[in-house]
Image 1: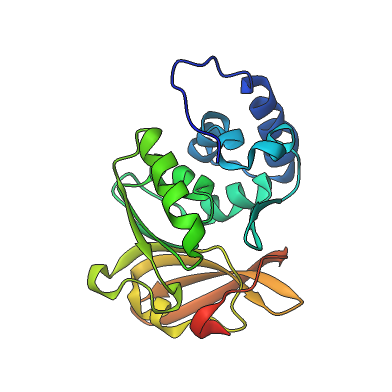
Image 2 (image 1 turned 120 degrees about the vertical axis):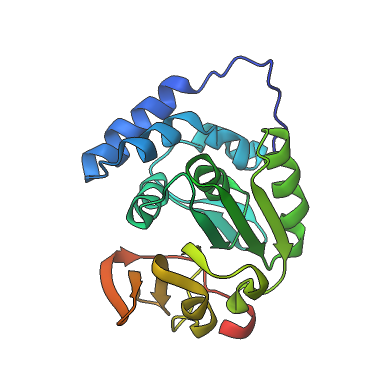
Length: 218
């Protein structure tokens, strides 16, 4: 991944503005805090060097090892539906290159992020630390089982698609917590779960296409 130089002038500000206006706001994302961090976080640092010129395109991009960085609109949409607060405790399943992790870290108190693809773990961790994030805890492993010793979580985001919603993640969601997860095999739906004292309510958000969740989910 591209290394971060805090003294380098950010040449991509206008591209991020265009990305937010044309790809995200135009599709209905309204949360001002989400829009602000999508303008702020340098997405081009989270893609391979050969993909930098495509970093702000309206599409997912490969980051190696069969994984992708999600389309900017989907990143914003999934973040918005979680309705994060400054004191939120968030579990992320699938660190990837760390872009979605950075977005979450800008909005919430603490991010616990798990990545199953070992070659992605250290580069993402090093990049996020170089950017100054101090509210992210990392784990290498299978996200299907979540992070039980740190549960419950106010919000859970899953960035790979299981065929069925992992029950351990539902159990680790706090009452009044929200989880967003792409579910399915070839045909996937982005599902929002809201946990209440009376049970778990599910709502389909939109059709999506994510890489499959591996490990115990297979």
